[in-house]
Length: 144
Ligand code: HEC
Image (cartoon, rainbow, N blue to C red; front, top):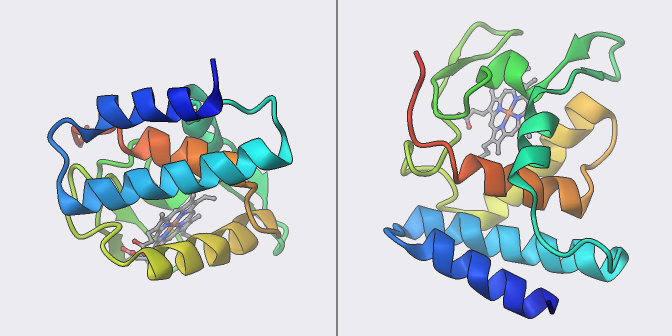
């Protein structure tokens, strides 16, 4: 199957009950999928499973500590998170739960790159970003 076909199917699945922010999140998934595919043609479509693994995986941060995205955002992106550094609450990341997410794409992309640098010590790969946002779009229910 051609990449465009896969992206089109993915778009149809995800555009059911799409709000503005959800549409924006999908746009980013397409964008990163296309970049990832041009870097590595065997990358055909975002993987929700890999996105979830990425979210929960512990990384050694540049400061030497271990942290996962889930350390602050909890193991469910639909939950309210808590910043392990400042103890401040973090509104849910999942755009189907928190409609304020993904409203300003430029800001989100900047924040995403900054986050990746903080946690991984480098920017995340386009495939990781595509997988991660595809995963975020599937989380609709807070578990706490
Ligand atoms: C040390 C705590 C911490 C860790 C670890 C962390 N984040 Fe965040 N994250 C935050 C805070 C604080 C914000 C900003 C507050 C907000 O947007 O609600 C945020 C915001 C975000 C946003 C929203 C950006 C926006 O503009 O809407 C995304 C996406 C995100 N984080 C992804 C990740 C990913 C992916 C990882 C793992 C690589 C990660 N975060 C790890 C604390 C953290």
